[in-house]
Length: 124
Image 1 (cartoon, rainbow, N blue to C red):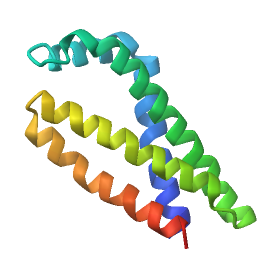
Image 2 (image 1 turned 180 degrees about the vertical axis):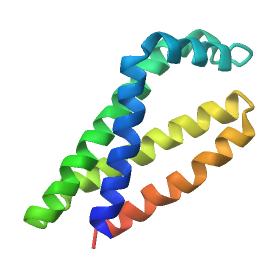
Image 3 (image 1 turned 90 degrees about the horizontal axis):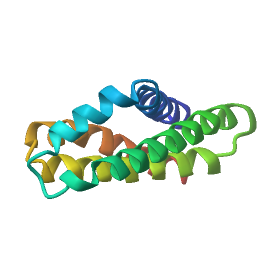
């Protein structure tokens, strides 16, 4: 279960962050439109940079951690990947709630529960 949870988080956040890097303009335009009527409208670019960085680091740590769990039975790297994943999801959830995108916020809940489960599993 440690391997599967880490692999899932690695795939989730590597894909998300790499997409934000490759299609920076499109993603940034989406976020600017998404937050246009929220108190966060003026902070979209710095938030975008931070969330991309946190997602990328969460994805890398989860992926490397998954391999280390398989090969060396070490869980520390995967644990930190899961913690960063949970932090990224809390940040995304906050943004969705502030933007009043309640369905979008609700979609994040299962991912957050998985991240919490991974944190628990990786401490065992």
